[in-house]
Length: 93
Image 1: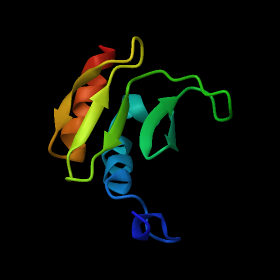
Image 2 (image 1 turned 90 degrees about the vertical axis):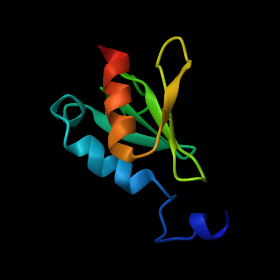
Image 3 (image 1 turned 135 degrees about the vertical axis):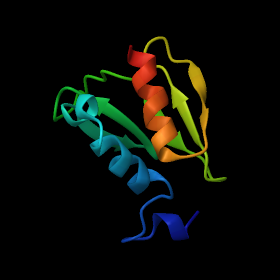
Image 4 (image 1 turned 180 degrees about the vertical axis):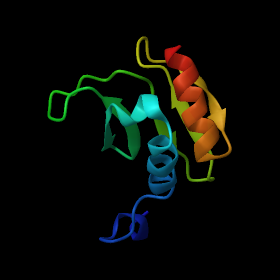
C-alpha cells in the first residue's frame, strides 16, 4: 500500500478508469473526481461536489466495484475499466 501512495505512482486502476471514462461523451460532460481511491463524476468543479452518476472503486485484485449514486448500493463488479464505466453508465439510465 505504501508504494501505491508514493508520488508519481497512481493508485492501481485509477488511470485506466480515467482513460475509459474519457471515451464516453456522457462522462466527458462531467468533472471526474477521485477521493479515497474512488472515481466519481460531478457536475460542479469544486467542493461541495454534485455527484451525478455512480462511482467506481478499483480493487487490489485488479477488478472494479461499481456503486449506484443514490441510494448507495453495489451494482456489480467488473474485470476491466471499460466494463466498469459501462456499468456506471447503465446505473444512470
